[in-house]
Image (cartoon, rainbow, N blue to C red; front, side):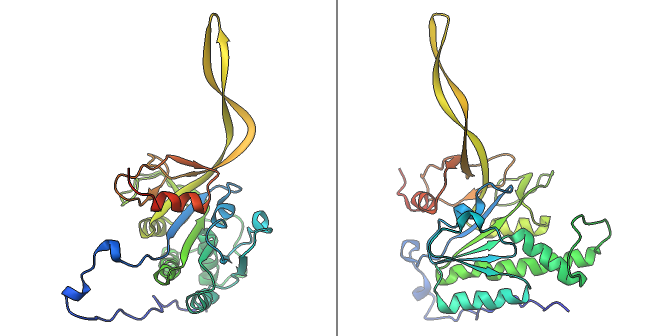
Length: 278
């Protein structure tokens, strides 16, 4: 039987002082870790980007996607074979404070692991069939996935950056939420994706594209500048508002957000977050 997931291991906050003592200027409030969700197709650079975050860094892997970061220093891997291990490893992260960043790779595979446990299967079939699980069982999976993800994101309360990596999914419908109403976002069940994206401060899509260069060409008597695609591939992190892709990026008022960050790194992201408004 799958282990029942507790909603949280955190103790409730205790009131300290009177009402006036608890009023703080937001500029004086203690900074917490960053909550981020990244999604994208296979090979789009999700894990490679996540591993540029502050070290030491722990990848909790419901799948092993570490081949692109095997030479990175300060990166550790914990294989997640059973969801009952997740609360234990998160407790270890909270108490040891060894890791400055923890990455869940991937939320999509965590969801699959949960369904496998709910159905009591050794492995899920590669191609799921209609009726393989009941609506109630899918509902159980969604609830447990949200509880696990909440516990994971709560790492930020002790100053740990929490990054959830997901595959990419096309929802093909308009949804209303705090972020851009997308048709493409994290490959999770609709209710889980609608919970995760607003719960994070930053949501972005990783993708690859061919690099373009500007070239001057002569047309008749005129010299014109045009863009030409090359065979070089560049990795991109979509952050700006888009009518199709789910994005979200919290910035101070007045700060300009680029539509796409080319060759993204954690330093480039935090530079945007911490920059003074123009």
